Length: 184
Image (cartoon, rainbow, N blue to C red; front, side, top):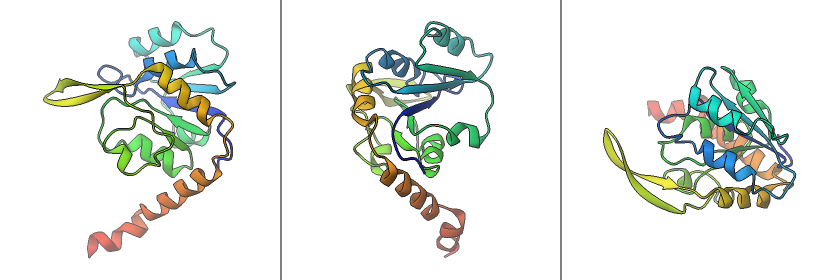
């Protein structure tokens, strides 16, 4: 169980098309954060866009950059808050895994995340723009200063209730709990 919001974790993966998880915005936001929050930002090895982005900020002592293919315990076993400034995505397995691990999930206040995650840690959307990957969709734009404000709002906050609710949510969404409903 997580108790206090001090270490913020972002898993950039391979960067997706246009950094859909908001990695550049999160890295830029760290420059605006007033609290002494610490950050772990991970990326896939060999991804030149990730390497280039990380190298621009490698001297920032608040950020621990990690490259590799990490197992579930590494991805969601360390840190208190999982932060993504998602611009587009479906239900996002990564956010579900973070919530199920007891992390406070701080992501963009957009559909469908705002239908199943606690509202308080959601990051306001500045605006939407039309984008296209096979089909057209609305892409959320989030200001790094807004992300920083959300980080500062939650830094040092007692998140034990959020952590426990994530664990309960995981039990409700488990195969053991859902299988009888699916079979019915």
